[in-house]
Amino acid sequence: MKKMASKKPKFLFVTGGVVSSIGKGIISASLGSLLESRGMKVTVMKLDPYINLDPGTMSPFQHGEVFVTEDGTETDLDLGHYERYVSTTTGKHSNYTAGKIYETVIAKERRGDYLGATVQVIPHVTDEIKKSIVKGSQGYDITIVEVGGTVGDIESLPFIEAIRQMGIYKDGYEVAYVHLTLVPYIKASAEIKTKPTQHSVRELRAIGIQPDALVCRSELPLPKEHFDKIALFTNVDKNAVISAHDAEDIYQIPLILRDQGLDDIIVEKLKLDVPKADLTPWQNVFKASKESDSKVKIAMVGKYVDFKDSYISLSEALRHAGFKNKKNVEIAYVESEDIQKNGTDCLSKMDAILIPGGFGDRGIEGMIQSIEYARKNSIPFLGICLGMQAAVIEYARNVLGHNDANSTEFNQDTSSPVIAMITEWMNEDGSTENRDETSELGGTMRLGAQECLLKEGTKAKKIYDAESVIERHRHRYEFNNTYLEELQKDGLIFSGFSKDGLAEMIEIDDHPWFIACQFHPEFTSSPLRGHPLFQSFIKAAVEYSKKN
Ligand code: GLN
Image (cartoon, rainbow, N blue to C red; front, side, top):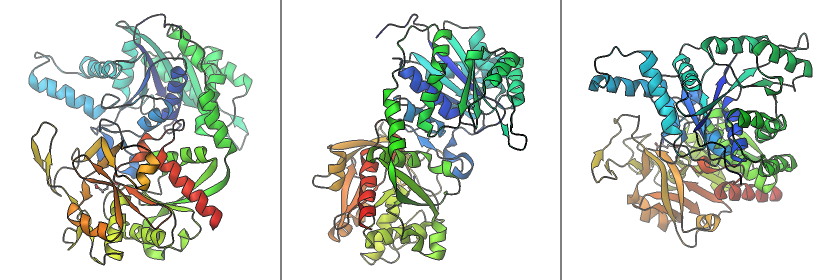
């Protein structure tokens, strides 16, 4: 592999215009995959203009999934896209919110670090943003920085100003800017409209940033004359106007961008001397998604199903497993409260049932009913986090006869607290921390990657084909080991434990595929690698579909 021309740190800033939710995260991640395939060590960061310190306490209905990184940071779901497209592991320096930046600035002011100066957005807040960006870039050849929100928002201004400054006062680095806009198609007049893009770039240029490339989100490929027009009005080279039309699959996007030479434009701007992109692995993923034949139907019985982004890593992990099994995975999102009201009939056409993670007692009984249905009818079942806790409750109630079994999260007075909060925690430094139901919600969870030791002779061990696995956590409650012996005696197999003896995985023997885990395997699945647990689950669903 050729050496890069200069050792200066490289930054690629991705901004968005016109409207939000047009896929800035996926475009940033795809750019990452393109640059990685050109031999570079890439990381991707997200700057979020909202005031929350992190998305950990935000409702999944508002903000979608909370993605948990290996080091246990609760982050924006876009970091999930980054890890699915790029082989990097993100962490606490990969996601900065305005709240986090201001928290640091205010702490410094209180300490007297600013030596009596009037603390202002420029330069103090913008300096802190720049420092955070540089911190997140350590150890990488190139850092892609996605700026949340749309250009013109009041909240995002300090971030845009900071990235502008990084382009002017380069402090030893090379910088490129990509702007993502929407090019709407007006059905009534059958016309493609470039005006919003013109305005959005004008707004960006008014702040002082001239984009090096424009990625235009549109329903259909942009007609030739529109490239010329956009280029003319935005001062962007015609070849650097890229059509990001609706893809057949989100994993086709790196191919669409590469085919129009977007990576070449960035490589040139950043003065890189790197080989051409080898996108064979992505071509194979796209091929697998296209060649997947008949469907398997998976019911995802959860409580945030009306907003699909709440389960995005999970839905993607199921699709990745589908690619590996050459099957199209169709996910039926079932509201668990509907099962409570109308019963389990809607599950009868499903090839497998999955209960995802969640918080709070709404819909729990519907999940327990669905688990009972899967267990009794030999339908493949996967429980994740809350899904495992609900599976333990179901087993304790319906097999052991502890009718009142519950988690103390849902009933503090249950006579059988099979899931409970551990009130005294030992921190890594040996100090202890006391928690109870009233502890602050932010930052009181078992979070991040931990080792799970797998038990000999179990399905889990066979699937992972390893002594132990590292998986990510995000929960407050645990299986209560007081009930371990009793449940084991009555047939529930505990197939994985943490090093300090917390139950991590359960399974049932006389069932084709009934496995649940306390961790979130979906956070480590990627389209290139897949994930053994999901692959095996989908395989079981395929087998079930053949028989039924
Ligand atoms: N609410 C449960 C807990 O806090 C499960 C959390 C989850 O599913 N992520 O333990």
